[in-house]
Length: 548
Image (cartoon, rainbow, N blue to C red; front, side):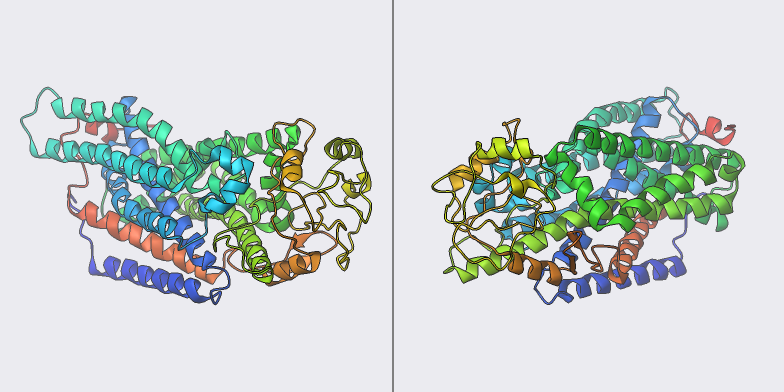
């Protein structure tokens, strides 16, 4: 068949999925009763918007990369990737909702969008030239808009080529390849910047130079998996009869190879951070391994172990049933990977906001803004005596002293096993900022002393991420916030289970299905508007007779 017919049954199915997703998204807005600043709604919205926008972008990247490399094997089904890429437009609209929320302070996804917090946090101040709402808005609208323009030009050239049977000098193909070559370097640089802002900056103190590679590889696997599943569906409906096991074998090889590449990046990022043991880097993995072990290790098992053992054999890449099964698991697995990137950091923000807001109300309503938080990231707990002594300049605090009179911390407090008396009410008694893993503090702390003690340029300071607290918050208060956030174990300092954060709940799964239905509805609508096979593409014959 030359043209795809978007059947009423397929439309109804996708619209039903979209309806389920919309209902789940609305419920997630109200499910926390407003106590969590609708964080579950906003994280679900951001998670799926970035995931499906990323799939659209990576399909364009695959088109551009293979075209520039003079590849021909994919040409038969390149309309699928061209249709995927058009979702950049609705994806841009979805990200526009996040942008409006930034300017109106309707959500609190990003710690760096709180001006009061940035002014008091030297790390966020240092990053503020990049992590700000203007850069976020300009980058999202400008860069995604540019991607859409270039890929749209490629698609239009491809469609014009189909209509011109008299073209003998491959002028359309040369123009198509020119735009592909322009797109590649632009996408390479700008996509890294946007994934840093959209996802990595949720853990605003943390950074990794490998994160953009890692996140992009995850999206490429998801895009390939969705391509395989859609092609198998279309073949079952009588379309793409010339797409055979040779093409699926190649797609299966990419699915397997990029899964291994993703694992290489996962291990390299983890190993280098573990080996260096720098506090502002280890907090990301420490938080996830300690508080989200099932999510953390399931992510690795689904996205590495499963494809490694299922797709290693050649014959499994040529069997439609096995390949569809592996693709479905990997598609969900890399959605889960983005869940792991986004949810733990957002939950920390939720806890810290609750602590700070209650504390601000108890002390006369000093203006911090409802987005003020007490530092976004959880620190590493390990300190040795020498490092703490260097931080304290060798002096010791007594119960009657405070940090205004002496910038000093007892070496004993560096020991993780030391219990800090949560009932202590005397002025100057150290209290543990337990959920942060930070150093002991006193009720009468000094901003200057803490700023000096947490100077990230000081090699003796193990915890450069410490956020200056203006007010005193007791252990009992913090434990209360941890309980409300899903429970707390005093022995292990871990967060308890919370649906929608520790693991995806029904609302998260429903929202995911809704976004998937919307993506497929938009894609199939675009497929129905054009020929499925580009009849005048110079590489079509090579694709038809392709042999692995």
